[in-house]
Image (tube, rainbow, N blue to C red; front, side, top):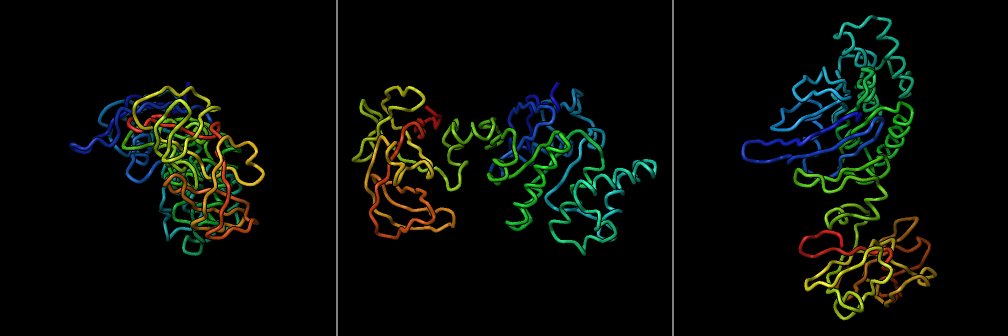
Length: 357
C-alpha cells in the first residue's frame, strides 16, 4: 500500500489546463520533492493532495483511503506553507496548541504533543515568546511544529524555506533531513530550488506545464536526464549544450568532431540535428585530461572565482562553454587552456523531440 497515490489527476481553471492526467505513487516514509520553475503546477498538485483545491478529474488516495472529496482536516495531513502564518498575539506554545484545542483533545495530550514537537525542533526555550520576538528561522520551526503536533502520517511542505536567507536555508535544510530520518513520515516537498531537491529527496518529480517530465532518484536525474528540459534544469551551473550532426566518426559540431565511443547507449544515425550536453564539472583539465577521448585548446573568456572551485567561460566550435577548475588554480581572461571531453560522461538528445538518445 502506498502512502499517497494520485490517479489520472487533472485540474483546469476555465479553459486553462493546469494539471494534465498526473499519476504518481509515493511510498511509505518516502521524501518526495516536486521540483520545477514557477507556474509548472507543483504547488497546485500539493494543494490538490491537501484538499485545498477541487480537482477536475482523477482521484487522490492517502493510506489506501479515497480522499478525493474529503475535507483537508479529514485527510490525515500536516501542511507547512511558505508564509509562516503564525498568530501574532499568541505565544509559540499557543500557536502549537491552538489547533489541538479546537479539535477537543485532552489537556494532557496537548501538552505531550507540544513538548515532543518543541524537543524535536529544539524550540523549548522559545515556547513563551511571541512570533514578533523570533527570527525567520525560528518562526519557520514553529510553523513546522504546528504541523508536527497533529501527529499525522503525511506532511506537505510548500516552499517552506523560500523566505529565508541562504545560510539559514542551508541550516534548516539539514534540520529537515534529520527530522525526516527521525520521524520516518511520508513527506511531499515543493521547491524551485534544485539544491534543496537534490539534497533532501529520496525521489524527485520534475514538473513542466502541468506534467511530470521525470520521476526518479537524484542520482538518476543528474546522470541520466530523460530530455533536454530536465538536463538543463538540473545542475548548477547548468549543463553546456552544442548542436551538431551525428556521423560515422562522431558528432560534427562546427569544425570539430566529437567521438561518441564510450557513450552508454548506442546512437543510431539520423538525418537531423542532435544536441550534445556536458556538465561543467565533467569537462576535463590538467591531470584528468588523461581519460579524455576528445581534446581541444580554448581561450578563457571569463573567470568566476567561487572559493573551493572556479568557473571559467570559453567558446568551443562557436558555442559558449563553462568548465570548473580547482579554486587554487591561477586562471585569468585570455589564458589558453586544454580541455577534454569523455563521451561516457556526456549526454545526447534529439534536437526535434528533445528526448534523450
